[in-house]
Image (tube, rainbow, N blue to C red; front, top):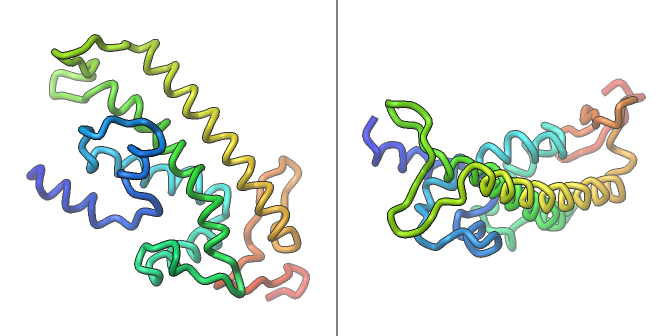
Amino acid sequence: MNPLDIINNRNALILLVTPAELKTLCGIAANVQSSNLIPSINLTQDMRIKEILGETLYDNLMIEWSLALQNAANLPIAPINYLALYNKVKPVLIWFSYCYFIPTNGFKVEEKGVMLNDSDFSSNAGVEGIRMMESRARKVGEFYAEELQKYLKENFQDNIDYNEEGKKNDSKFFSGIFFSRTNNC
C-alpha cells in the first residue's frame, strides 16, 4: 500500500479529537506527523470511550458528532446534553490516546523486526523512559476516566445498570431515548 493511501485512509476516520489537540494538551512535539497520532486516537475511542459509555451511547455520540460536522459547538443539548458529554469524554480520549501513542512513537516496526526509534539529534530515553511517560499519561487518563464515570452516574443514573463487578450494562440506551429493562422494550 502506498504511504499516501494510508494517510488518506487515516484522515477519513471520524475522530472526536484532532491530532493538533493532542499536540497542544500533551506536549507532543509539533513536528510529529499528525497522521501518526490518528491510530492511537481511533484505538482509544474503540477501547476506552466505547467501554466507558457503552456501545449504544457511544454510537449515538458518534452519530451526533457526525451530524454536528465534528464541531463540539454544534452538538445538541437536549434531550441528551451531548455537548456536556463530549466535554467529559474529550480529556479521557486525549490522555489515553497520548498513552497509546508513546510506545508507538518510541519503537518502530521494520522488516527486520521491532526497533527502538532513535534520533541523530538527541539522546533516546530508551525503554524505561517510554514506560515512565506511558505510566504518567495513563494516570492522567484514569483520573479523567473516573471523572467521566462520575458524570455518567450523576446524569444517567437511572439509565445505566451496573453488574456485580461494577461493569456497566448499557442495554437501557436506545437511539437517544431511554427505556427501562422492566418495560421489556
